[in-house]
Length: 212
Image (cartoon, rainbow, N blue to C red; front, side):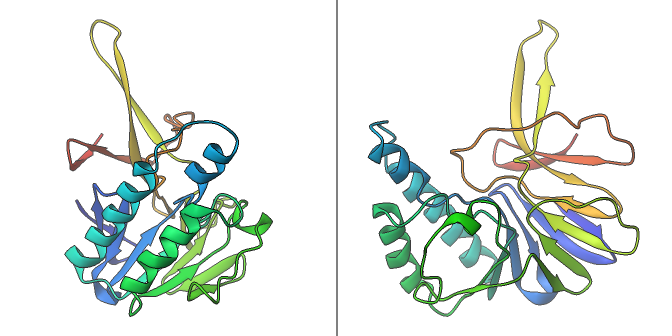
């Protein structure tokens, strides 16, 4: 799905990222790498295939769009070093020529990870990639800036005639912001802001993106 944000073309991918063709840049948020390893270390049997599937999807995004840069709007990692982080480090070496820029989120701030060793650039709370400002949590509305953010794990609820319902990840777009879906499939979905005015929802389903 191709949209215009702040006079720039962005492609919304069903692989849970937005691509900026002009700069060959991928925007994504909330990878929560290490989350499955953290749960397993606490006795909760989460399969490691979740991590492998997320990394496979990320690799597919890079290769499909021939991206040169990834800008992550926070929560790239979920917890301190564990076996999942080691798997990511091996994956990162395969894509060593890709620039990774992390705008830290609330989880990233709590960790003791050697980002330099992982070849990841850490920014301040906000990072400018003009004409966009990337941050983890969406700040108060500001008509003078276009914000790309994550954090909310946005979802859209579909309700059928028989009252059956389905929640799907989505992109949330207004004239001044883009909220990215959580990249990791091992996250919940938040649907609590569905009725805001001047907001468009682009829902991910059946390997496509649909305007809700």
